[in-house]
Length: 150
Figure 1 (cartoon, rainbow, N blue to C red):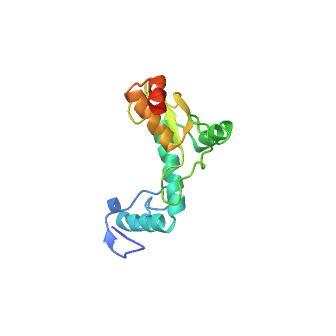
Figure 2: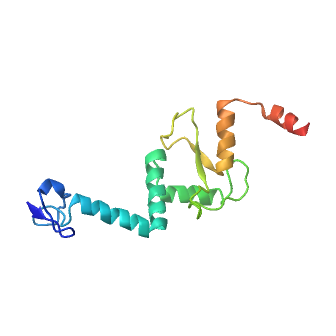
Figure 3: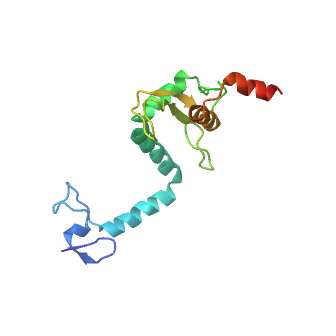
């Protein structure tokens, strides 16, 4: 049994996360109190939470690091890989919308994840939607252009 430093309740050792640097190899606060701490930190630090989330998503989805993404952004000179207009940066905006999407070849990696080798470019979210539609429903660019010229 161990007493939680936060709530003061006596609980079993299984109710505490493991910690290598303490004498009993457990944190001083229980798992329930740890969850409260984590949720509070996320509420108090929304910008850092969003940045951490973006980085973890990037690693999980595209097998890329934040530095690799920044290198690609600089290589593209901050311009969209499709329309070549300026992008607003790599971080989310205040309304939490994405400012930049990572485009990858779905013929190589179908689904929501990429091997990391088939990343083509950084694009605007709207341009990513266009690419997605063209990949799903092969349209002739000439045919779309003719339609728009009518």
